[in-house]
Amino acid sequence: MDFIPVCEPYLNGRELEYVTDAVRTGWISSSGKYVTAFEEKFAAYCGVAHGVAVCNGTIALHLALLALGVGKGDEVILPTFTMIASAFAVCYTGAKPVFVDADPDTWNIDVTKIEEKITPRTKVIMPVHIFGKMCEMDAIRALAKKYGLMVLEDAAEAHGAEYHGRKAGACSEVSAFSFFANKNITTGEGGMVLTDDKAFFDRARYFKNVCFPLDGPRNYRHDDIGYNYRMSNVVAAIGLAQVEKADEYRAMRIRNHQLYRKFLADVPGIRFQAPPAPDCVDVCWMNTIVVDPAVYGHGKDDLIAHLKEQGIDTRLLFTGMHRQKAMRDFGCDCSGDYPVCDWLTENGFYLPSGSNLQEAQIERICEVIRKFANV
Ligand SMILES: Cc1ncc(COP(=O)(O)O)c(C=O)c1O
Image (cartoon, rainbow, N blue to C red):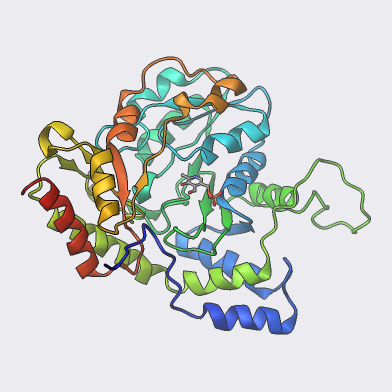
């Protein structure tokens, strides 16, 4: 039986050629042409002026928050249904994460519930484009304008997603991406901060490189506490090859998702994230389903176990930030109800989602799901 992994990276471009070049020429640290080329190419792909490549997406978020000047005493509003890195990055700055429940259809931050969480300490709204579907950026931007806040897109899962003609990462002051191995564009580990604002760009570059003065002499005098968040030229070489294929990979993920929807359309009790809104493109990072046990006939845990027996790998969804001991211990307000997030955690999971998944594999996965429900 052929094992189907949940998400394998797909590297079918010039990765080896570029990496070999970086190694052969000895440019293996963070200086080198691939870092700059990757930053420029990825920023241009997203329609943003500047890119700052870093070691991973968590760090990209931290650096973006530093660029925005977020620190102790500030609050950052983000969805409770997200990968914990979104919240951890806020904690690193000393600011407090404040949580908002998910929308039951889009699974993104519920924009109708943001305003009630705004206080005089709120500095940033951090929408997360869950599974490659962009948040309602017009509504979020309008709220930010009304209250004088800044917006930071956590676009870790949304390379190439579109919202009314603008790409993910191009709808806020600063945005952050991850290039982890399961992402639509990957460098194994990697991340990037994007911004149109030269001042934020400079602050990000400054903090990324242990606060060496950007234009001054390297006299080893430092005015601020900095970080070594630099991406290596070898890693960036992979990134450049991946960006060159960005549209191809995006199309593959979208096609895979459409196949899942088609093959599972008549299976009762299986629900997907809402389809793309008009004039928007979802990039279907992960094919996620939510199971209604009363209708499907089995709960998600039984279905996951059954898929595993058939050689099909899956992953659980995020547990909400309001349920995390780490967040409680940090002093976050985890009281209140977040029923949509809890419903997603309880009933949802990822199906195999790699770009290079074959139609026959998707058909087989869906057949297992269908037969288990006796459809
Ligand atoms: C929404 C979100 N934010 C941030 C991250 C962190 O990225 P990384 O794993 O590259 O640190 C991830 C990673 O999957 C993510 O899904």
